Amino acid sequence: DAMVIQNPRYQVTQFGKPVTLSCSQTLNHNVMYWYQQKSSQAPKLLFHYYDKDFNNEADTPDNFQSRRPNTSFCFLDIRSPGLGDAAMYLCATSSRTGKGGYTFGSGTRLTVV
Amino acid sequence: GQSLEQPSEVTAVEGAIVQINCTYQTSGFYGLSWYQQHDGGAPTFLSYNALDGLEETGRFSSFLSRSDSYGYLLLQELQMKDSASYFCAVREGSNYQLIWGAGTKLIIKP
Image 1 (cartoon, one colour):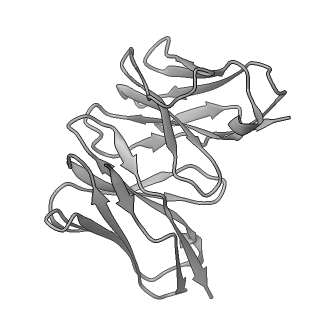
Image 2: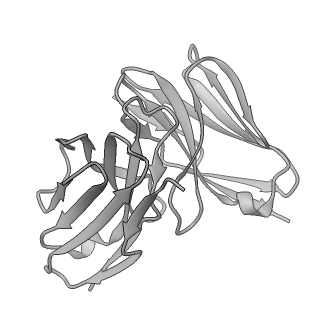
């Protein structure tokens, strides 16, 4: 089945220690998104890629970076995680038009200790 | 500015019908989506309305009135597994990005 896969499902990292979250898709969608979601809140868009074109949201902290080496894979790098970065990180994909909705991965729950 | 408003919480009884409303103020409008999210899970796409009227998919229906900047999600024959948060989201431009509402927590009682 075509899908979006995120690894790992749970990630514990130390305060200030760089961490990378990964996402892969088999849907061949042009667009990939990284969202941050905290408890009882809506997902907050961090970045998105249209093919290889990178788009950073204006309020995404510099601490967060992303890479998309090819159509299938996308990575979220948090350079120096703080306690406030503990959240669920969701990867999603969509077609160019967004029709058919977004397909989300199962998310990575990040804990910062 | 851009805003989507939906109730923070709705309670209903198993087997009943519930409607979750969403009003929006955005600079553009291409369509209204609904997503379901169970606790600890990821959002799942439910429906998309680009034109006025009712779209039905099984027990779930979604309605849109562009003149009123309003839509709703209707859930029929409620089951306990429908307990989740429901988000409305507007596609504002010709591209693919969404503006999200804050979500409605649906609580279902036996």
